[in-house]
Image 1: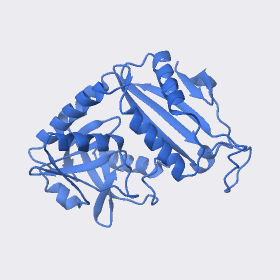
Image 2: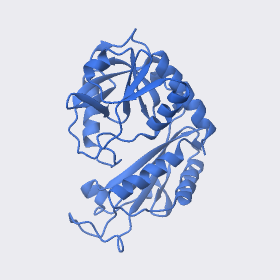
Image 3: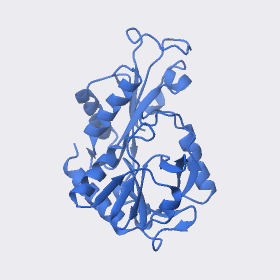
Length: 286
């Protein structure tokens, strides 16, 4: 049985509770982060905590604990649950003042809710999908306008993944005003010639922590990067494509809306970037 963390306590998962009046439950009024664990160490932890602080600030939400305290909690859960490879999920909500109201509760009298739990994923860095690539479909992007805040409002991304499954694919890329925004839980990229293309940062997409690292490594490896919007048709005509996320790292895309990219196998740029990312990230893991 997993040990989880809820508001200052380490508990068996069956004993963990949160108020039915918690605003995360009633209003999706919360933010989260997911940090990968490889070899018992946290990948890109500093980046995830910096983005958490930004998300909290954008929603005028109280910070639940300091950086060092959150690092200690992550490490204790990894130890308690004997996680070698896996994920640590952290969620902060605006808490509960004992009733339901659209108006935010007073942060001076209502503490945020802080929850963390682990997921064991043996062989996380050696995913079979990374060797074969994944298939994606295009769907309309109808989410709210602040995708740069990592909120727990994940209903439409979940629906998108189900649309993909129904279509015999693995994931969906969302389209707004004719251009790809991002995947349901990842940033999207195409490769044409020697150029990697990915959408520029704005409120339209999540500012991926893995995205930032991968683009930095790509530039250090003398790869050309263009940060701009691209269409689904442009993607279908690309030499290769891939997505990045904290749990998938760099994942090749081999088919878009039934159109195979290249020879239908993971391309050299995606394969190389995955190797570089894993190698470099493990060096700085904590």
